[in-house]
Image 1 (spheres, each protein chain N blue to C red):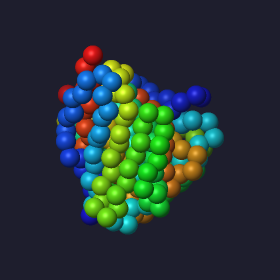
Image 2 (image 1 turned 45 degrees about the horizontal axis):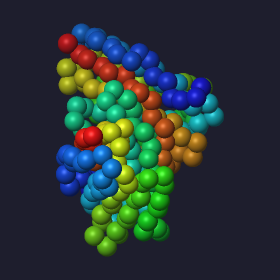
Image 3 (image 1 turned 90 degrees about the vertical axis):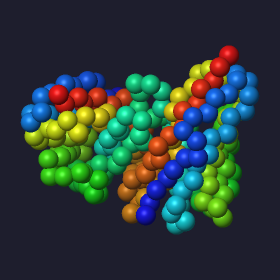
Image 4 (image 1 turned 135 degrees about the vertical axis):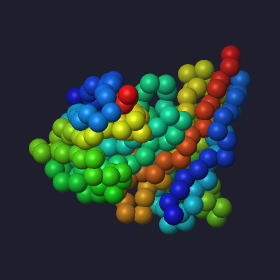
Length: 112
Length: 114
């Protein structure tokens, strides 16, 4: 079935370090993936997306890597800042192409 | 408006009561989505509107849940005979493209059924 999961529920890093958040997905036919950041009391905020015809996409301080062979997605955050502390969700577009299916999330904690 | 607006931000209701949650999407966005998020979980899809029609309502858990979007902009999620298990944050999102591509979420309505 369609399921997007994460390897680790929590990740703690020091300010200035690079962070890597991982995600495994089960539907090999998925064509679109996205990362969201959610701060306490707020809705998810778009970070970066990637289509299945790409392996890598870069944004400002963030990079998403897609490995279709092992159905793995990762989000890399460079020079992590305290403001990056939040829950991060990966999501994939469902087979019907009508919605995003979310995993459970990884809580990133950044200490100064 | 500049973002997706949801009202109320918090709603406490008694078990068995009827509630309505409102979503104002970004102006011009034809696609609108409702999600439900329980504590510690990712958002769970409920329903997708393209314009005025529900293009996919497969995520609605049962017939106590219903949503409308009569003029293709504002949407209302309606829950009848609320149960304690309905307590969650209800998120609305909208997008220009629709079809499940990246969209903008509102801050949600926290529903508590007591």
